[in-house]
Length: 202
Image 1 (tube, rainbow, N blue to C red):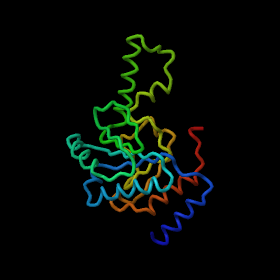
Image 2 (image 1 turned 135 degrees about the vertical axis):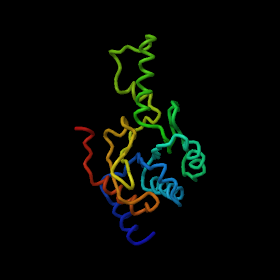
Image 3 (image 1 turned 60 degrees about the vertical axis):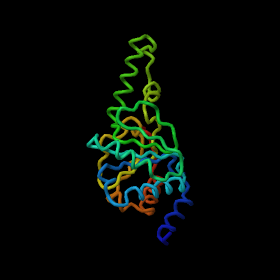
Image 4 (image 1 turned 45 degrees about the horizontal axis):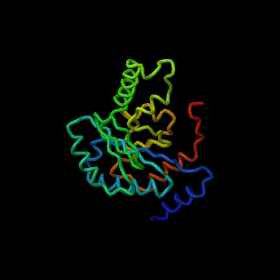
């Protein structure tokens, strides 16, 4: 660890605010085509758990659905420090693991599937429309957990991200491209999170 990284790590440890429990990072299929992209992902996962995260979501934005099987195959080779759940287009099974990887599963599609499931239960009489609340929606999401911190590298846009889960998340954008993302960049994101006053929509 360099001196500057050690300085940032010390600031993080001494900060009165706790670290984000759930960290999400948004990357693109193009990011994963860059040399060293998967090594960066392995390092990112190790940093996240080293600095206090209990859960990490990797959200891979995909424009060409045909590449999803290849991306999933490559992502499954990544050495992860915790168990991992992979979900892609068409998946409806709830992801429940310390590391959750979404590959091309758009937030709009995920939310629409949850609404469709609720509508089917209303139609069969298993669910009273007047009693539907947020919990009913969240129970049907593939990725049910709400990230505390969402990191986006390379550009200030999230694409079709987790539109329900991230409504109260703290968003952190950096100009650093994914292939160049370093520990100091992660620590800067965490310190930025710790310096914010979360309002949760209030």
